[in-house]
Length: 327
Image (tube, rainbow, N blue to C red; front, side, top):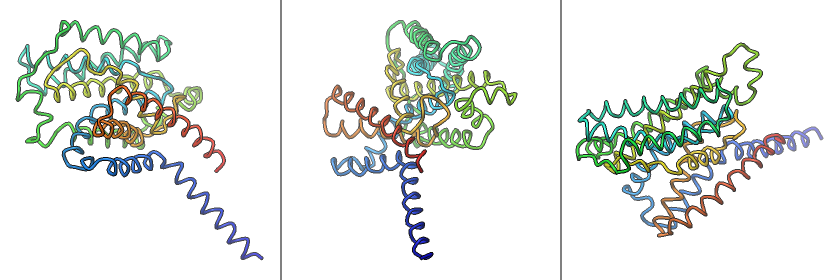
């Protein structure tokens, strides 16, 4: 009798463990299934050229998603990332093409200016008490306007051998290497540093963190600075790939970044989300766009499909949360 009970308990435990595995890794499972399906739909999907193009295209958006994740972890939102990308693209292109600045220095200046925009938003949210949605909406408008002023509404062309160096084959595609390094760095920061843990704690229970004597405002402000810095760098990546600095860069990118975080299991209420899963979410969006392009699906239907995927991801997140409570 006792042996039968033990077998039943073991079976139940295995079922729970398998269920928990599916809950914890649903984003990665979706990514793997998408890769398998895409390779079946297109013979060229797994070609080295196509995979390289995916990595080059998604290097910037993934960085934006990582920055957005840290803001979301605090319970905030950053709608300014697309416009800050435009600032990064136009500032770096203008410095290089019109002032003759070295491309490395131009990239650093673009990132610093991005950080300034992020600190501006962060101060409005953390110290002025504005909602992240409203504050970042204001910054989005300002940053886009600054981009148009810098370029006077005209794309800034870049000479060969300047900013395009960071996407060149001869240099082993630096933007891919930079993106990989930053993914690893921020994954470690989130998991192993006090800053990463406090950011998550703020989103989970701000009052408890404040009662522990931690100054939450500076942490909230810093997340917007990180988000803007990564957005500005992503804008530089786009300028490098197109050899053009345009004020229209990054339009709608804030929505893709939020979608990547949500698909990766982040909670818009704050306190839940992981860097690696946000990266997986960004890759899922990139793969969907890529396979639809390979299958010659027009751009407008692609937006419709992406919208339904976001809805499905949110529903999956709700079901996952319910399952976690029952496990």
